Amino acid sequence: MNVDELVAHSVKHNASDLHLCPGLSPVVRIDGELRSLETLPPLGEDIITGWCADRLGPRARDALLAYGQADGAAALAGGQRLRAHFFRQRTGVSAAFRLIPSQVPTLAQLRIPPAAAGLLAEPRGLLLVTGAAGSGKSSSLAAMTHHLNHSSRQHIITLEDPIEFIHRPESCLIQQRQIGEDCRHFRDGLQGALREDPNVILLGELRDGESIRLALNAAETGHLVLGTLHARHACQAVDRLLAAFSGQEQSFARAVLAECLLAIMAQTLVPREGGGRTGLFELLVATPAVRNIIRDGKTHLLPGLLQTGKEQGMLTFDQSRRQQSGHGEPAMAVNDFCKIAAV
Image 1 (cartoon, rainbow, N blue to C red):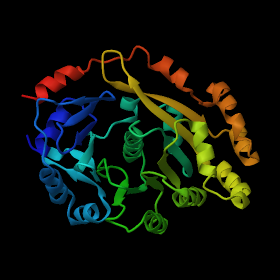
Image 2 (cartoon, helix red, strand yellow; image 1 turned 30 degrees about the vertical axis):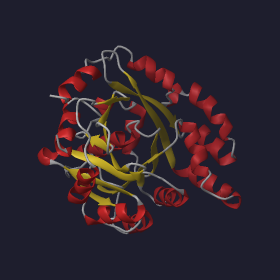
Image 3 (cartoon, one colour; image 1 turned 30 degrees about the horizontal axis):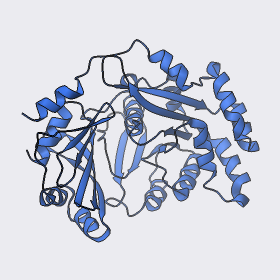
Image 4 (spheres, rainbow, N blue to C red; image 1 turned 90 degrees about the horizontal axis):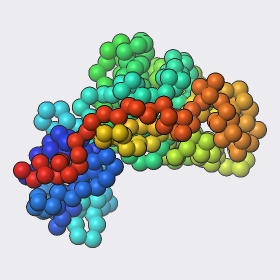
């Protein structure tokens, strides 16, 4: 079984990730759990690196040789897309694939909180999706973009590393740019986007202080900015954003964030009744009280507002869990997948 066939099996049986390591049988992640396909033989390092060069191109191949790791996205036969990361480790070159659904999910399918969905109608401001790696942040951003694409007439520019979901323009003009391919750096791409007459700017991930600063600037200057950030809770994300600024800049940063923040939606994936996983959400809406707390630097008070702000659209993980109860759907058992993949 070659790499493409392994990917096809993984997709067919609802795996979210596929891991290839020289000397070991392939490993898949289903419903958050790793399972080794022990009846399948290991793939050689030459096959793994060859796939990298063939599918991701010379830029990724050269990066792998020079730096010991490379990232990219690829489309397979039939339109299946995946995000790929190759890295050198003790026994050779391994690969980690994140499998991207062929259809862009909708807000309803992901059960995005209505208050968060409603904020997509705002003409300007910062709306962040946060969570741990593998919590579905990219899917939520894709669903938001899909909603805008079918409900408004706007110019949407995305800056992604790499591009995951492909959006076909419907009522919106959508232009997707991949960092390293279509522009050199995140900074260059965002500075360019501000000159390209956008209404909405989607930022795949705010990874460092510079990207956070640029995102706030874009929101402050009259654009709707959607982005992701690694933070398990919405209130923690506020501190992460402010930590990008030095002590002397803190007062300015708090004022800017208080002015432009719309909401922060944290999310996680949990087992669903009957199998599979579903999203739980936490939503911190930038009400006047939240803005005042941020402006005054009293972010330790935010969890209290989150707990008591249901009437303002706030949502806690516990409240989300109660709302999701009773929505279980059947899913294939992990053990069944492992048996079929060996056929």
